[in-house]
Image (cartoon, rainbow, N blue to C red; front, top):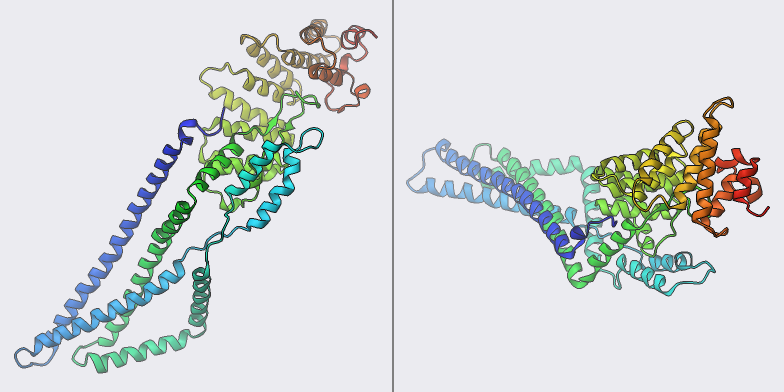
Amino acid sequence: MPFVDSALAAPGNNEARIDRTRRALMEQLQQIEVLMFRVLTVLLVAIVIYALATFALAPPKPNGVWIQIVLRVFAVLVCLLLASAAGGGILGFLFGIPRQLQQANTQIRQTAVAAAPGIGAGGNGTSDAAERAGEARAAAATSRLYGNNTNLEEISDWITKIIVGISLVQATTIMAKIAEASQNFKMNAMQEAAGADVVFVLVLIVGSVSGFLFFYLETRTRITMLFVDTDTAVDPNALLEQQKTVEAAASTQIADITGRGDQPGRAVSVAPIPEDVAMLSKRYEDLRTTEEFAAWGSAQARAGNLQPAIRALSEAIAKQPGNKELLKKLAEVHALQGNWHASYTLYSDVSASQPDDRDPELLKNVLVASLYLGPPESFQKALALIERIQAIPGTADDPFVQLWTAAAQAQRYDWMSTDSQLRPAVRAAALAAVKRVVALEPNPQAIVRNLLRQIFDPDRESSSQEENDLEVFKDDAEFRAVIYPGE
């Protein structure tokens, strides 16, 4: 089952989701813009009132002179407001210019090439051409063939640092200059207006702050989206390639915990896929969506970095708490880590949430995890799960299910006291399961037969001493005759 639902993964739906996000952002931005204009409108009204108050408080003047006074006060203050807003707007633009996350294309490509032998190698160490092609496609998804000109960004960075530095060092001098300018303004521009110096400072501050905030927000939103649209328009396939990379990394299995590899019962990590190269080149801080966290965590797990994988998958689950595929992936990572209790709990939660609890593969994962919980809990839960699994058509003839049945019965036998009257029946059930494994898989070199021998006699098979469920019957001639026929 793919991690990303096919309907959601369709390009049309993906574009619709982006459009909805943009519309929501634009609505919020428009509210902020309206607020800025309201502030400026209030300030203009205050300027008009101040101009009328200046006429009312001024000494009597000849007819027609009062109109000149009102217009001059209004015009001077409006010019001051526009000039301060423009100055603040320039600073807002410089502070708001987006910093492009530059990627070292050469380094990424070198990393991809270096990782290709391990990713594309087959059993004999040779590279697979199809996987190399996928690796190249994944690397291309996160790099570009050209670099954008970032001179404006660098200049903006220098100027903003210089402005902040000078403002901090010369704060006292700046305040003194503002006070001096306010006095000059009062004496030369508005001799008739009372409190013109105070009004000068207020208009200067409000206009500068309003202009700064307005242009900062505009630059951080509209101009940023314009840059993104420009890049996307130049390379229309880049977004689709990135989406394919994320989906492939997120939907690929992390581990097989059913013990069908060389190690019985051990969780075996799936080999990295070509798309993992692109995901591993990303930083955790750059991840945003649920799919990105899932893809990054899956790639980290397949690369053997289990703790970062748990962190990323946990964040993805926090964003989508009911996502069954995410819960199963986190269960796989916990199994690789040896935390079987956490793995069993997650698998059980997924199984309990299924409307029709008849998914044999999921139940097999729960079964294997339960065998590591420790007796008596391990075999009690395992035997109950086995009954549910065997009730599903086609699973009763699965030799692995019979192998796990024998392991659960052996754990039960070993846990029981030697004088228990049920012990012979438990031994018989374990022996019947072992015979069923051999009958269902007559090839002695098959994986399930190899696992059967390993958990029966780890010393002889030079296998893990921890995988020894059937070792309790090691000296039982009847078991040995079935497991090692012809001896």
